[in-house]
Image (cartoon, rainbow, N blue to C red; front, side):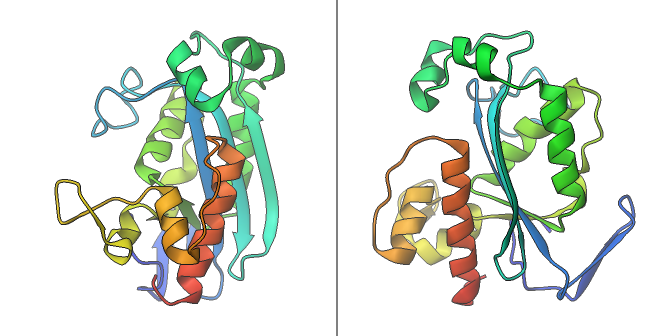
Length: 216
């Protein structure tokens, strides 16, 4: 399932993971990333590692079907073979010096993340395609198995376009930002910080509110 409803199936079997996913056994992995920039093409596969920017920060939260948080992690990545551009630093506030001094080795973080993936049935993010491909490219670079492909996926950006109905974009409505989705749901703004853990918490809150209202 890719950027679609989360309640439109009874069970899904993933042969590559040897898992059976049922309605009564769902574990949601919420993710967000900050990166070194943007891809040259957003349509390129994650195996095209020259296309996708490098991972600077990653955060994830694992929840059960009721929204109870089972684990939460956030990591800054120590740069390997790249320097964080100044333009990217201005967006997320993570300088190259900070990442070098405070960052974790990429392999360590990806292995920690893989442990969370193994406990999950669904992957959720705002602008999921971007995060999925950025992380996927890092798995390829480190020659670590990418188990994200085993998870059912839901994008809170593409999946709520009709619900938010914000004019603009190439079609009738534009994809809502996380800020716009949150405001549509709760009628209150939040401070935009471009911090992975902060954003993933907001995404989680929006997702379970959407489920509560029967929108997804």
